[in-house]
Amino acid sequence: MKHSILILGGTAEARKLAERLSGDPSYQVELSLAGRTLVPAEHAVPLRVGGFGGADGLAEYLRESGIAMLVDATHPYAAQISANAAAASRLSGVPLLALRRAPWQRQESDRWRQVASVVVAVSALGETPRRVFLTLGRQELLPFEAAPQHDYLIRSVDPVEPPLSVPHAAYLTDRGPFEEAQEAALLSGHGIEVIVAKNSGGPASYGKIAAARALGIDVVLIQRPELPDVDAVGSVDEMVERLAHALPPL
Ligand code: NAP
Image 1 (tube, rainbow, N blue to C red):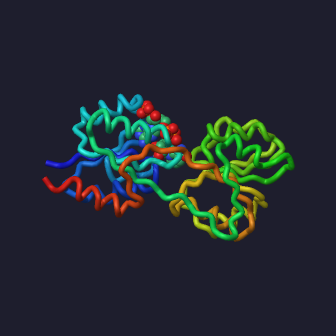
Image 2 (image 1 turned 180 degrees about the vertical axis):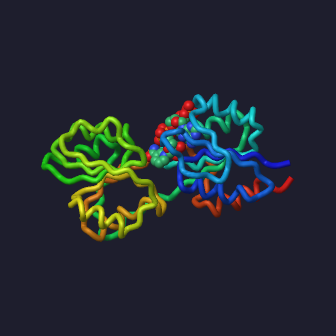
Image 3 (image 1 turned 90 degrees about the vertical axis):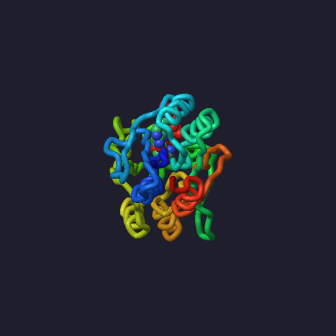
């Protein structure tokens, strides 16, 4: 007999957690992805891909699959799926544990401006043309079409199709983690003056923040969305410990 665990993923932590749990004979682990990227990263456990059909659909999936523990290891800006996980846990009675990365904290020479949304980030860039580095998803990029005066460098996992309707934009496809030295070379090489980013937390995308600090580059940081107040831990190690405690060997 094994405990079935469903991990809601799409993050480096979810991948690491799956790898850690995959070697434990007490667990049967499945990892769920939304299906946003064309070729998902390699995972150590079976994957299921695509939405569940809201909180009700997720609750039904939990019940039908005999899941003993739901783990929300999604990105801190994926607020809808986290809300659905909390609601589905209530509806199904399946316990939920969340893995929540702490946000990055401002350091002394950071040139951060924190804004409430992508739309506010666009106006924060100002009227004067600037060279801007964007690492946001396709839907989040569209508001930048309202500021065609800037020169954009856009990095994404999959190509941005169709490209933005702005006269000056260059595109890069790449998947993190990104080291500070690599990010500093990219920022300097493109003469970047300002970065628009999410406060994702964790090390994988911190390289650009550290590089911006060292180079004196402005960072417009989009604030985190509200997430449900659920039982949460801050690291993969803590999650492994909590699971061992909550799901002792059968
Ligand atoms: P979202 O707005 O919170 O979720 C939208 C819908 O996508 C959900 O209602 C759910 O559909 C489906 N979904 C999301 N995550 C899922 C998962 N892990 N497994 C199955 N279905 C999922 O999510 P998002 O911001 O578009 O992010 C999508 C995925 O990308 C997440 O898994 C997240 O971890 C990852 N990601 C997001 C960001 C970001 O900045 N938002 C960055 C890096 C990675 P149904 O309601 O039909 O179940």
